[in-house]
Amino acid sequence: MPVLRLAPVTPAPHLPVIDLKLGLSKTVGRGRQADVMVDDPSLSRLHARVSLDDSGQLAIDDLGSTNGIFVNGTEQLSAFLTPGDVVRFGRVEYVVSAEETERLAPDAPAVSQTVLRRVAMDSALKVDRLVLEALLATSREMMAFEDLPALLERVLDRLASIVKPDRAAILLIDSQTGALIPRAVRPSGAYSSVSEFASSTVVHQALEARDVFIVHDIRMDPRLQQAASVLLAGVRSVICVPLLGRSGAIGALYADKLGVEQFAPELAEYAAAFGGHAAAALETAQLYDDRQRHFRATLEAFAKAIDARDHYTSGHSERVTAYSLVLARKSGQYAADFETIRRAGMLHDIGKVGVPDAVLLKEGALDARERTLIEAHVTIGYQMLEPLPFLGASLPAVRGHHERWDGAGYPDRLAGTDIHPHARLMAVADTYDAMTSRRPYRDALSAGEAARRLRVDSGAQFDPAMIELFDQVEQEFAALHEDRDAAAMRAELLRSVG
Image (cartoon, rainbow, N blue to C red; front, side, top):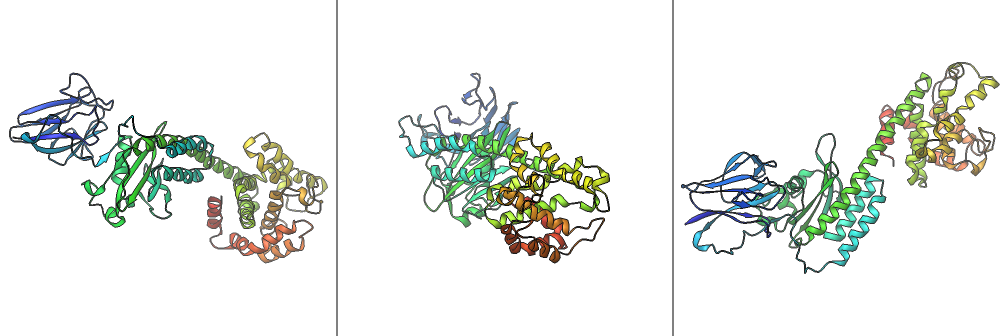
């Protein structure tokens, strides 16, 4: 006599097989009152009822569960089932199959597993020393990263040492749209969106289940075997680890193997442990990254407020920052200092808030007293920013961008290499923008004339090495100053450098 069976996709001692004969129904839940007790906290005490009527129609009904029932990935209150359907109670999946009574023995094995969640580990299983070392190294080093892109790359490095995939990626959930965005990919360019992954289904189901998914052989899984991306890429096996932070899912780790090799079942536990380390580090790095973006936006608002006092200098801080970053990038010596230089450029004139309007906006030449007042803006800005420890590295350029190579500058009359290199670099950028901007007392100079005057003052006002750098990027300066799309070019530069 035919019966229908619901067998766990992931066989385990605490997950019973559910067999139904014609005319029978059974309740499923984690409470003792359930006909079929499933020992998993994601199930309600009475979670669902499955019934097989006299005609052989199998039905399932939700009994008011907390986490619901899902049929082939879609939440249902009631549904009819057929062989091959996958039913999820809470986070535990069952697959429906048809069996003959005489073929069933009391210890009949469950349906072949094609998709695994985290598996129960055999206590006698040999522990992989290299994997454990990778996990320990991960826990030690990941929390030290504040730079999110660098951390993403390190996570992929460590993932590769554990699961040895052919391809791998980290996807993070966009906080605004909720979309999964690939943020790091190996090999480079393998994917550009989650839809191109061989198993986007697995990614989403791993996040829904909040547990590791391993597909040993995609060809044996009806939900994945027809995917065009699978056929095109020749993917054989997939593993996906959800990244779960304190406030919920933040993304997923994905890896796959091509050809004939498959991921081993025991990798699930290692991958789960690794995912816990990685999620904690990535969540912290994301928060830091968000803080940096908000902080940068605040600096830009401050700079615009400063520049707004004088419409003749509108955009000055942004332009000086862009020119400074161009010089820094060309030098090749300041790769670790881009953010420091960016902050200094945006705030280098913040001390002008302490200069009276009568002096700052005067259309004629300044007398000696007025010159003293305007020169004080560098020390005023320095004193304003000095109590902020995260701006400490930017202070030398804020204070020293009006020092001169020959020692005749202000406020400290430093000379030569006693002047901080960031200040020497910014002095060129600041002067170039001053000369190419219109003032009440003169018209703007052309880019070519400004460049000529910079060279004339090499070794006097400016560090000769900085002028040599300027010679190499003069055309880029000119484009950022006078190109039709100069504003957009500067904005892109400020976003991308560093």
